[in-house]
Amino acid sequence: MGIFYGYLILLCFAVIFIGISYFVSKRFPIEGVDDFVAAGRSIPYALVAASVMVSWVWTTTIMGAAEAGTIYGVSGGFSYAWGNSIPFFVFIPLVMHLRKKMPKCTTFTEFVEQRYGSGVSKIFFGFGIAVIIYVFIAQGVGIGIAFNSMFGIPYEVAATLAVGIVTIYIAKAGLRGSIFNDVIQFFIISIIFIITVPLVIKFIGMDNIYTGMLDVVNNPDNVNFNPEALSITSGAGLRYGITAIVIAMGQVLLDQGYYSKAIATTNSKSLLKAYVIGTLLAWAPIPILSGSVFGCSLISMGIGEGAGIGLASEAAPHILNLIYGGGVGSIMFVLMIFMAGMTTGGNCLSGAQALFTVDFYKKYVNKTADEKAQMRFGRNITYMIGIFVIVVSILLKGFSLLMLDIFSGILFAAPASAFIAGMYWKKTSPRVAAISIFCGLASGLTAWFVIPNQDINWFIGNLLSLLVPAVIVILGSAFGKYEFDFDTLLKYEPDHKVHEMEG
Image 1 (cartoon, rainbow, N blue to C red):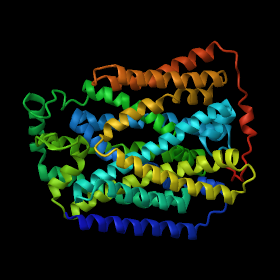
Image 2 (cartoon, helix red, strand yellow; image 1 turned 180 degrees about the horizontal axis):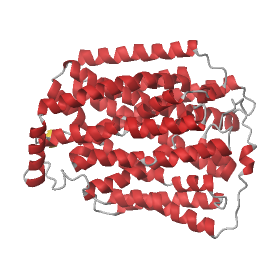
Image 3 (tube, helix red, strand yellow; image 1 turned 90 degrees about the vertical axis):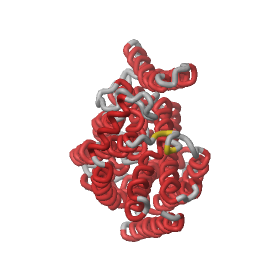
Image 4 (cartoon, one colour; image 1 turned 60 degrees about the horizontal axis):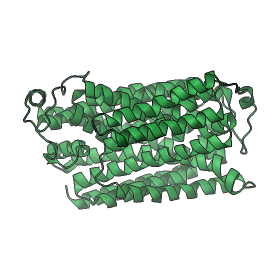
């Protein structure tokens, strides 16, 4: 399909979604900081469930899971799914506990400041912003690859336009607009995926896929040779799944966007239903099918990295382009990838708005600012982050989405133990929390760069980044004398007006 149609699609996306942002901002005017970053804490669970599902459908959920399918075979998509689901079942009870213990909390860094003090809070703020920027960059890279593969639009142009559209949308509409947009895209992504997967299977044929996969397993001369490609419990796939837990743990626990949605629900019961439905029932089938259908279909045809495609990240767009040959099918796939990036990018930016609006501006920039000034600052920061993400996305042209994701696990898993312990254990001190984070980060990065075997350095690096802090937190807390009074959290009063939450 020609480059003209690619630009036309981007233009249509820009008009539609920026138009929606203006409609939402006019129909539901933002009345204050709490309305801006937490949607008035009154969103019903069905809307939050749809929003959680599409916010966790990254471009890497489709393209990265397909890449995992090309590398690990049938276990790739399954490992991506269970590995990325488990952290949400750490997050759900944690955020429900937070709502109960600190009912006027809006951001996770507010909790950290009250629990550990301003020094540790600044560390977590830095990690929170880094997670947001990384995830948003991954969406820009994925969309750039998809539009370049399907339409021939220069990668740099596609990434720039996509990130720009999301940035303008969120800056104007805030969290409420992000959730409304998510619900619309939930239906579109689901419909396209339900249509596309059977078409791929029908076009290639299940017998052909299975025969091709047998050749991958048994033929050493096959470009994709992998004796475990048909094993759902393959050793490499299991290691990747464990790594996915580590990767997603930091991405979930440090992404303010998920806290904002959790805080925005009407009560804890709605929160529980929304996140269980959104992750386990609605989200998990997508990476399973992306890895098993898109990834395995490609390698069953003898196509692989360096043999038909330049990068394994191109697996999903390549197989769809091969089958549809342009036309409506290509438009449907690009629409799905673009919307996945839109929703996830929107989730990231709404989280950044909350962190900068609530935790940064009034504390460090203007201590006497009113709520209008806070919201204006939040919007300006949104534009600045968008520009930064565009620049970095362009610089990362040619990088593997899967390897970017794996490396991010080392960076963002390190603070998880200190955060979880701080939520439940009164004996974890600020000093122990800070030491655990830096030791975890140092050990993980050392393993990544020092271990020469690239088949295991990423696995050991991720495990060390998660487990070393856990050991330090447990030993440091058990033998320390520090004790925190959790009752102080109930008395917390933020600088802006907050809508009271139900239990």
